[in-house]
Image 1 (cartoon, one colour):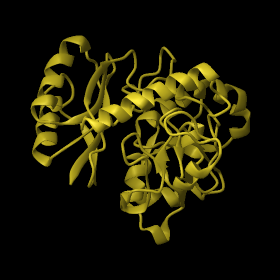
Image 2: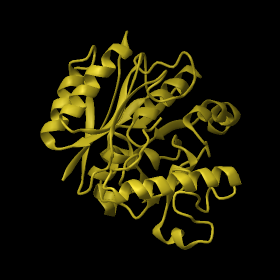
Image 3: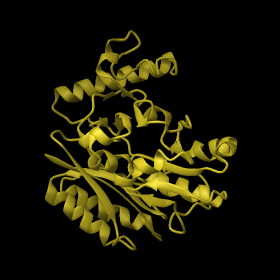
Image 4: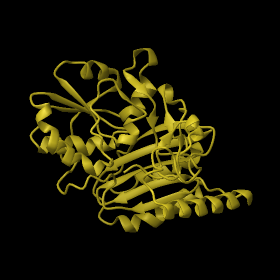
Length: 304
């Protein structure tokens, strides 16, 4: 079994570039794969490998400036969820694009998974899903507001256009693992919202801890690794990935006329040009040739 560890930590890193090569080196030495993002505001990402290798990488990260309190979430997969290891330098570890947002200064009230149902069913609480529209489309909490955003960067503009809907409401927010809520709740506090809450550990922690019979979650949760989606108990969901647009689709969607492996699905067939599709077909051909040579071409992106 592969140990899959999702992590993030907000802390001041004065020189992220100097941290990149040593971090990548320890990941490669331990045959740990995935994606880690470094920025002045901290670290974010998901890695996978054997227990010992992941533990050694976590030890290295905890030794970075201000990272001793690093928290993470573990799950497991029988197949490798990542094909290679990437450590990238970014402006933000999750991109919101608002200059003064700082989760280290203040965030919403953390709500444990066991207490989440009582909060979101209260009549004076509005529940907002901070994830992207393609993630919300395959699963969300019952009654949650979907902002319909294409990326997290769109959230502040959506809030400004819709904030009057939430007047005199307590606001409860959630995301996959918690990182987007660190920023979105800080942003709402800066906008004058007095009572803001968010699900501690995100959807993944809720699905791990709350029994399915008591759950208010409906559908599957998109994850940024080879599992594509998970359900209650973090069991692997039914979805596969369209490698053209990176959206989750169901296996039966591959029988639809718009689907062409690596080129298009029903979500994106009308979004790309003939030139784009020709380029995707050539990429898919090269991947097929590499696979025939026994080379690993699993490709995944990091949240944010």
